[in-house]
Amino acid sequence: MNKMELSQSWATERAKQVVIQAIDKGNLKAAQWWLERKLKAEFSLNPPPIAQGNDDSDFVNQYFDGNQEKFLDFMSQTIEAMREPAKV
Image (cartoon, rainbow, N blue to C red; front, top):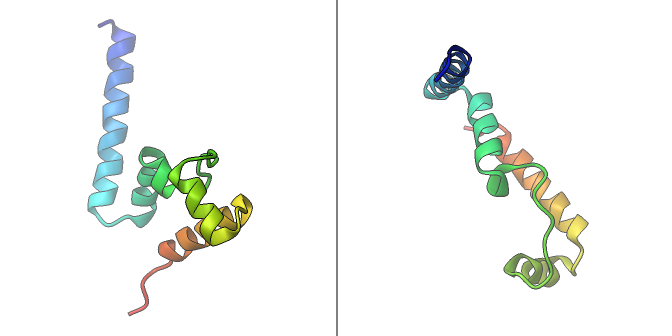
């Protein structure tokens, strides 16, 4: 590995450590950021389009009259509600 590659590798590992430390300290924004990027299908605000003929398509057809926009709006609202602090 040359000097540039070592520097880039060190910076990447250090950045990962900072994110992990923030999550360990309870930083909700850091945790959300990580999940949105690493588990896009579950936590992204912009999920991939629903393909015809898969299980998601059947779900949308059954509960949202086949209206994908209605489904995506519902999912966005659900995600936003999950982001709000829990009321104790």
